[in-house]
Image (cartoon, rainbow, N blue to C red; front, side, top):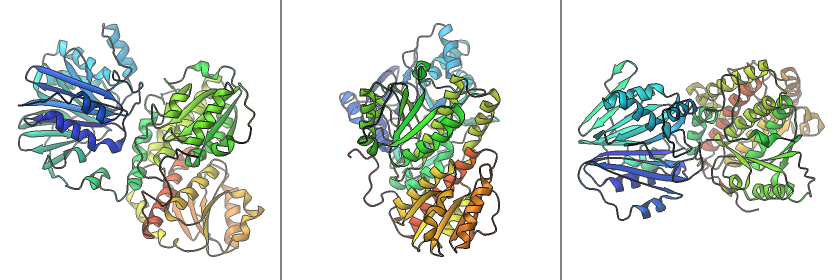
Length: 602
């Protein structure tokens, strides 16, 4: 999740930008850059890798007097981490930084190329600056040209633009990606979150979706679809760690709440009206492929297990799932008609990386699903799909699991689409469900409050069973893992139909059963399984859109139109339950004992 900073004023601009970007490192990035206009002079610097590289490039550069400036840390979504792809992006006389994804950038890019524009990068962002300069040719009013540019953009964006056509003004717009404006006297600051401007600005305004405008020294004009609007400044907090958490108690809690938004970014430009499109994939990747083998660890393994149902059901291709740490030592049979997929949040998971190298040595085509571009697994793979989840600081993965599962769902439909194994009707049904998913991920105050109240009843006992069928079995595994990781309570995930094959022997009033009971999939069968547990006096927490009389506790979900929509809604419930139980037990939710975020050794 990229970071933006901007400053307009008389202070040393380079240091304000670099210090601000440093405060945004927690969001994750692979390159960084700044641009400054002082008088008629425009300077820009970019570097890949850590901010130290950008500091080194700018060590002999200093600013003085009034000027305007913008900076950016980039997490790649379109194009590799290179200096050309790093922000700010340059037109003939303007610079732009941007967070989010411009969904119609390909259409805009073709239009601009037909007008003779040459693109230097592979990014969607570069279209903004060229589109602005095209508009400026016919509309000499700079703000009017910027306004026309924003009206042409589809998707999510927080963007800042500076131009030699108006060297005293920063132009800004926000839709779907966070951005705020800070104030200190006549000085104006912009940032993706509070942390870069704490200690610099004294007041802040949090931009709303659809807001745009311009800032000059001592003046800010704000507009939305209804025209110019007034705004009220707030006092800026002084606590940087709290600011990074955006008011949430823990990073994990923040990341659970972020899932609805990041899921939109995962789908942007990929889920179209009538098809799935992956720019990252050459269709030749599927030539000669008769089977899929997916290798992963931990939470990523659970997303892989979920996708096995989807690949076989939708794409009609055999899909085998392997635990990476076991795969390496089983002397696996690997044939070149198998597509080898690896999944990793960090892209550095040691067992998964070694499994990928084994597959490469055996001559298999490889595809990685990862959250970090330029990571070891991405570099090693023939192709890669980024999940676009942004950085995840909580050790117990939440939004990484959600976005991995979405990418795999999209990939199953894409593969079925390319192989001709899905009908237009099924494609339409699946796409409608995908587009509905962000709503299913929204955490309501009522839901969170109820889980907070319920959590006090689940602090003792001899363990938890999370049970589900079909795709809800991997979700049961993931729900149990989340609880184990942060509460240190024993929890297991089981296929509901396996209860009578041994586990039901544990059933009594001190066994807590978390039952995933979707209306769209095998409801009557799992209901029967839960009734058997209830008859043995197990304590039942049922999660379902359908009321269940035998439940001791019941969370009623809203959606029952498609199994995957139910899947994601129930996923949020299990994440929040684990969080609230852990909080009541007094544990460190973000840094649970004995665990690391990225497992880079065996």
